[in-house]
Image: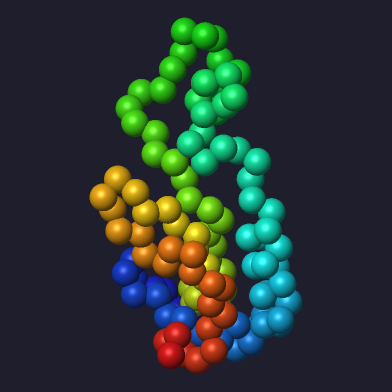
Amino acid sequence: MYFPTSDDWEAWPAGDLGFDPSGLAEAIVFHRAHETPWRPGFITASGRYIGVADEPESSGVLGPVRPRGGPNGLVVRGGRIAAKWASLVAEHGRRAVGVGAPVELLGARGGQ
């Protein structure tokens, strides 16, 4: 049995992990095409934060709320990465890794 450490996960080809690579690619494309309808900044048309929009008017958000990025994902089986994708937003002086990254179906062990 394989147990990855918190900072070192093996990446294997999707097929080696029992996935149909073309089917997995289609599922990822579907996921990226069906973004949540929530606004990126989590603020409703009425100007209230989504998390408290159904709460009393006196409720509010504690602390800053940063806009979210687009759909991101990771497919893992048996502790090994089969696919990953990201649509991150770079802002607030932070470096976003994988901005607009395409789907990466791993084709060789170790992601090589």
